[in-house]
Length: 104
Image (cartoon, rainbow, N blue to C red; front, side):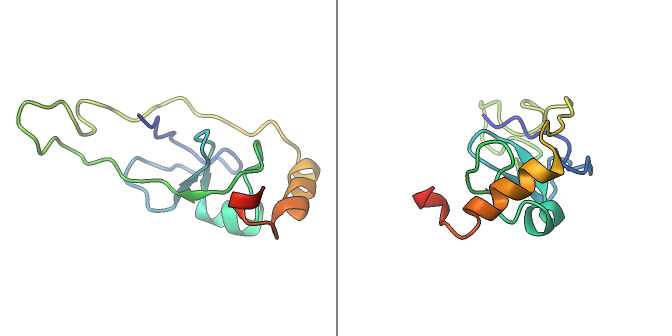
């Protein structure tokens, strides 16, 4: 199950569970739409993988007898921050931005 991390790991913008501005990689590194486009250029700062819109978890369970939704599976409150410098992120983005994520 996705953690639904609460912030952009680059600029620290709040990204609540219902945000349509949140992007993730396959390791769940989480970034806002602005940083994905203007800083990361579609490349995860950590793994070099692609970034996709994070799905939005329903607020409640719509299936009787199942413990689904945010009420039963809350989002993470642990804020994370990238350990990479801007120069390191820029170098990785330049090297990978023109290679499709499936080919990286």
